[in-house]
Image 1 (tube, rainbow, N blue to C red):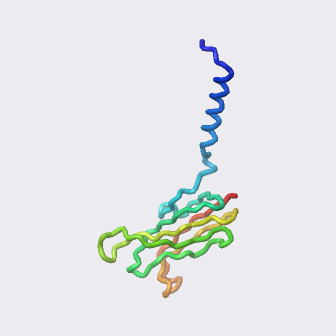
Image 2: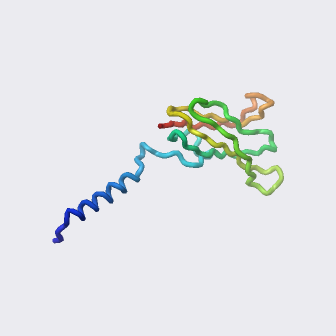
Length: 136
């Protein structure tokens, strides 16, 4: 039997507590840095000041483009990024990117629609929504 010193016990406990502090519980799931079509309908957590990127498939040559449909402007800002082609062919598809910035604590549903703006809401062919829970 090995006798343990108080110092060894203290160091071991400190190491275990430090490792435990780095774990994230399931109720504190962090928002991924990149959201995709696979996240449609999900609820994700974000802290004030954090940012995440939303990437959605788009083919601008068809005229259908993604646009923000609804969200609480007091809680989040959206900045549309560049379109990135994922095809080598002319008229091929790609992705549009949005930067989501958390501004204040609360919850909001960020809704997007893929449509032809000049044809109105009757042209919506796809919708995307994610609920953002923003903590301080």
